[in-house]
Length: 269
Ligand SMILES: [Zn+2]
Image: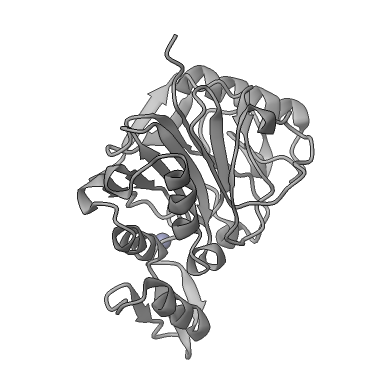
């Protein structure tokens, strides 16, 4: 199932057909940042102006209807820790978050979750029956360390059930461009716990290198965890190929802004 491109004013964001909660995968379009951060940069601490970033969040909140002043985020470190967050975890932009986690989970209405990417795979999860959500930053290291398994366990501890969970695997560097070494292929095989045939291919121009479809690996892992195939949508966009629309860490050599994947359970009132 393909994602939808939404344009509200200048702001452009993607939504997934499987997720009924309010959510957004942001693009580069519609912000006010300049230069390498042009224009919807959501990443702090990368050299962009604080003022521009604040305005980007304001514009994004206006376009998506997500209250970005009530948002939980974490310091992402490419590990597999997942944190259950509450209103106590709402931090001001530009303040250091006192913990590390690459996945966050909540059942609190009105508390928006955000994870940041620029090639890594952003995964949003939602159990619409039990009202539990997650935002998970799935780079390859976190993926093979089974962060999705940890995210589902955290969601289940709040009452979610795998058979209800809907998933959106967002824009990320894809099988066309994600060149890795043999050790990553081996780790992915171990992670999936089954044959990953069809999800990687050798790079014919570089000895010992492969191209890995990490988005599909993560979709397969979700299915092994009990998420139904029809409840999973996978973006077909590659951040490195679509460099005008998304930031790619690999393409830019790290000189870049950051996109966000956001999700929130709307308040009832
Ligand atoms: Zn590509």
